[in-house]
Image 1: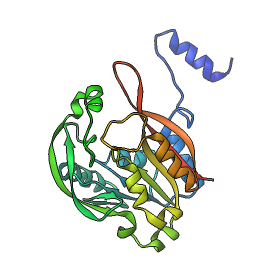
Image 2 (image 1 turned 180 degrees about the vertical axis):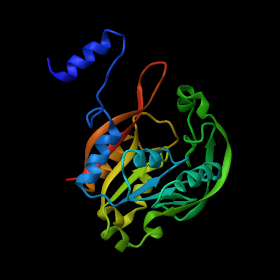
Image 3 (image 1 turned 90 degrees about the vertical axis):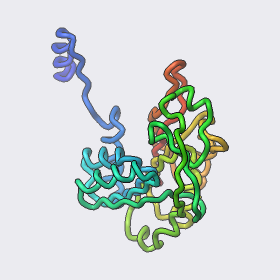
Image 4 (image 1 turned 135 degrees about the horizontal axis):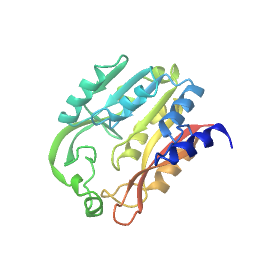
Length: 239
């Protein structure tokens, strides 16, 4: 018996369960390791909400630049407060998509399920707190309209997308900048939760055709009644 198993056995006798955190069972430790391998110098946090993802990345040791995008006014206010507690973290109060336009976002009761696509009853049934409570006028921009190509050519970029069914629009709005992105963390849906949203095969296929390989898949949203996996976070990197 090795020392780890011995320690676990002792604590188990007292009803205490010990789990050792490693890259195998902690997605943020794994992600930080992958970012370090590829010398990622810039994180684009698309659909930042109140800054949850950025705060976790900081907690796990990423000290390089974070650029967050969040269109909702209330969530953006919280995001700014979160970013002010950290260096190299800037925020923009607009959404990213495949067009430069003014649009309307459906605001969810839990905020983070808000989307530019109408929410379906299947989503509300699995997560009643997400039920829409109103709409908000927002601005949408293409990523390649926000940044010059030289910014991406001189940085190793990780693109994180959590936009509730609008992920493929964000990717297509990257244009030629996508060629210079080293990694993509994207929310993938296995069943329709928003009207006309692309599902796992379409988003996976787009990334695969653009030179990305999926290295990890993490449960993000399951039906609490049936246990069915509805959404997962996919981690894609270039070989």
